[in-house]
Amino acid sequence: ALEDAVLTGYGLFHKEKMILNEEEITTKGASAQSGTSGPSGPSGTSPSSRSNTLPRSNTSSGASPPADASDSDAKSYADLKHRVRNYLFTIKELKYPELFDLTNHMLTLCDNIHGFKYLIDGYEEINELLYKLNFYFDLLRAKLNDVCA
Image (cartoon, rainbow, N blue to C red):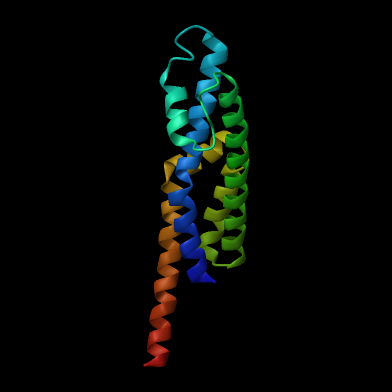
């Protein structure tokens, strides 16, 4: 279970950061388009970066793909948040006392979008969690090697 938690954590936090960044780009692009509605909104960098980062959206038809991209990003954000929260609950179930406060803090950050963005973009808490999990995994592996030797 501990090895799986370590591997899942690295896979989740290092691969999923790009999905959250795509959501931020789309959100910023949509707010820029609705706020400016001039030539700078549609011709800015957000639509082109959206087409490069979101393989499911087609930008050939104008304004409708960004709305579709926003919907898919909202789903990917909700999915990412759900997976991060499930991962943190899994870590909490391991019942390592040194991880309890950190896991609770991270779960609190997941409660709103700004805290979640801080958690994903900041890496401070994530790195601390993964460092401690690695420590426990290495300690467990060393104990098993001693018992088997």
